[in-house]
Length: 234
Image 1 (cartoon, rainbow, N blue to C red):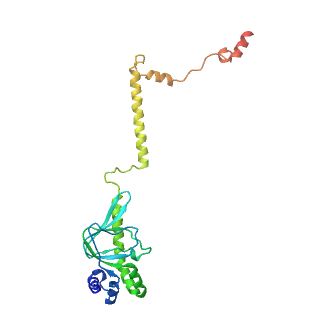
Image 2 (image 1 turned 120 degrees about the vertical axis):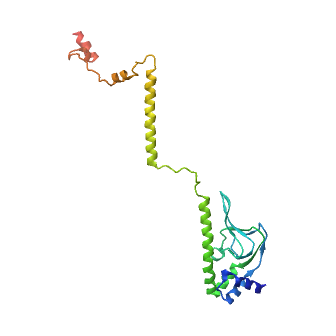
Image 3 (image 1 turned 180 degrees about the vertical axis):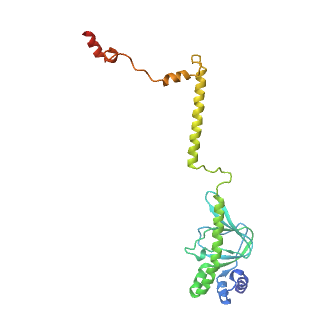
């Protein structure tokens, strides 16, 4: 079994360039599980114990968005790598993984591999440089999906600029005021007791300045009431 796993790892492009000794160390941490269609491989928030080389089948990498339901970030197939959180503290899964059909994988134990890194720093460096590309692909897929999910709908009307909105409101108010003035003049012109000129004579009369009284300085009309009474008493 172990010899068979060494051959699978050695032939895979992800491990290409590693020495036979390094492949043997990896195979010592490997197992050969399988998952039925619909079975969960790991869940978000669980301890990240392993990573997986998919030999056969398809796996959906998913994210549970509370207000939008389950979102599929990527669908992985034969030859691809699943899981990277085992290499980054605190070693917690960031996504869900679910088998879409019968799926066979090679699972490599993360704790076992980290123990191997302590004695073989070159092995740790080789795996880390390979997993950086995997992590970048997963995070980029998550970013694109979230941008698509929360993008504003294409049919949404563009927001007006505050200055233009105020100017448009002022013009609308002015037009409405002019319409109201015209309606009032027409209403006044059609009343039975209104003058025939539509109220223009009344407007001119109101606008005409009032004339001062021509009473003389001694007239009682320009004096207070008590002064007028006193004058008559004399």
